[in-house]
Length: 168
Image 1 (cartoon, one colour):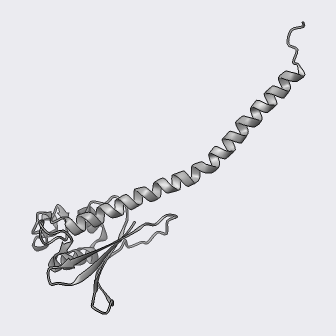
Image 2: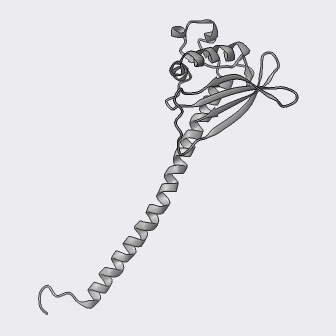
């Protein structure tokens, strides 16, 4: 047997091996992109739900943040009472609306989100009509490939049914 001879069987086996590797790589790379998109969607959903939970059931820090100046507020929350879930303070909603109108960056910092979000609160009357109580959106709206919306319902301290909508 001579040195450095390549047989036909070796070439066929090597070609089949490269073909299988190529097939596996192509199929894997096709399924990887939807996996990344789904992961990003779940991450955004978690962020939106966390913001909604902090707004609906958090009092804020300090709890009377709506009566303080901006530099004294550590975190905002819209809950009226820690013992009642999904029971919001109309005064805290109005105070957060004022913060959002003045500076979205301050609102984002006080809510504790790293991602841009859109927050809306609508009062719902007996006929199902919606009236805007709060609108907090970034100054420059960027359209992204994946957007997630979380809607939750609560009552206010004056008996109104409200819808909280968070979009991330």
